[in-house]
Image (cartoon, rainbow, N blue to C red; front, side, top):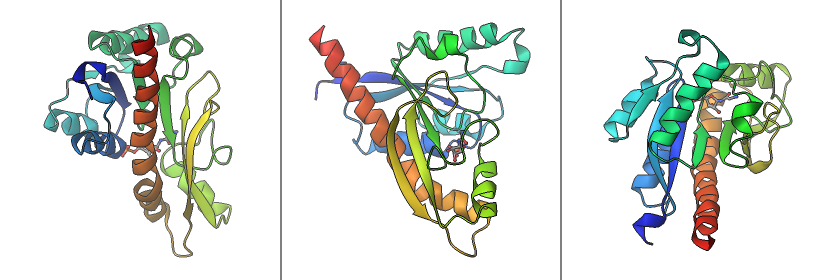
Length: 208
Ligand code: GAR
């Protein structure tokens, strides 16, 4: 594999960054022959994900919505970070800020999101992080899972790339369920979706 054909990936985070870690670990193991994480952008300056990036030697940037006068200014900051490394794929790995249609339409089928449920169940407005697992347990579901999908203007509504089911146990708490969904589904599906997307873009670039 020639190094120059690696597609640069920007990972957007807000929290712990375990999904970012899964991508970085997959890259280190040689499982992303077409992709390289070029920058991590956090919407929070205290996100632990930033430490994970630093430890892996990946450049970081912070873009805080509340410090920006408008959504446009916020997205401008994110775009500058993305463009500073020439990233062609954007991964939302626990990124908790909403991106406008103006932003998402610039990167059709190039923004990947990971969501901790089997979309169309438990998704859209108000369903994020632990809230998803709380709702799954409250509904008495026996099976849940995770979805990786492309991002368009509809929250959690873009084309699905992969889904994986995970069993719900009777004694699950939102925290134990969240952990199992991450281990069994999210951390496996997300790096695979990154490689699949990067491989497609690398072949498009090659054909040009
Ligand atoms: C993950 O479970 C991810 O699926 C979820 O937030 C968590 C982030 O964890 N994302 C959403 O709910 C988006 N709607 P991480 O920071 O450890 O990767």
